[in-house]
Length: 239
Image (cartoon, rainbow, N blue to C red; front, side, top):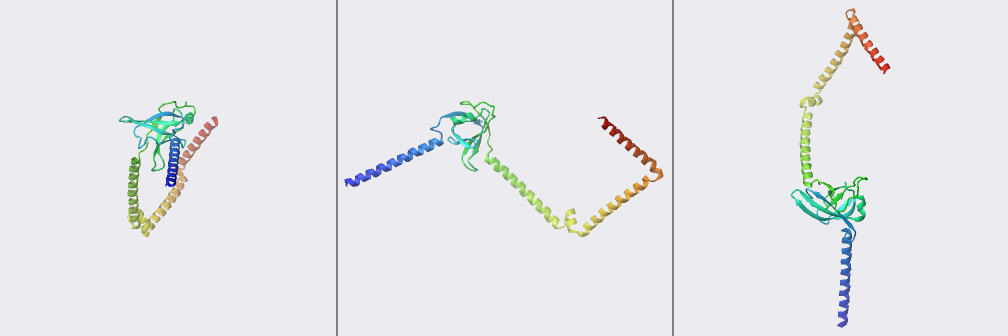
């Protein structure tokens, strides 16, 4: 009986020790992720709407997690203050003109803060300094815009389908041109006639130029054009 009790105590002790070890390991991992054991410095920013951001969410700089959200306070009806804890070794890279925006882990992941890179010649952000921010784009606004675009695309598709049906049915000028061979032939003959008329007009103008009644007029016009060209050439040579 005593041996059985002793084995039970040993097992219980091992179980408790393993539980404590797992607890300490979990605290260490969580603390490392949340920068509980790293020296940090505090900076702050303000938003009109934090869009679901929560205390403990990650802060990223150049795509790397560098800190966590420490506190979120409502200052007034149009301002929400967000305090951030960032690892001390990152301080040299965060400039006073860096901006803070709200992003997300993937498409539907947790919210996070993103600190942009500032100017190379700007001073480092000081302890407790307030950085400027960019308001996030709400998911609802994006979905509403997509719905409007989809509705417009549906209307355009329906209208194009109606136009193609009319064309295939021979309705309208384009439909008759495609479907009605007589109409197409008449249009083609009209273009041929216009081309012939144009050629005849050119021949008539050429005959007029050689007519002694109009020859003086065309010679005068030709000399005026040659004089204008010569004057332009002389101006170009002076330049």
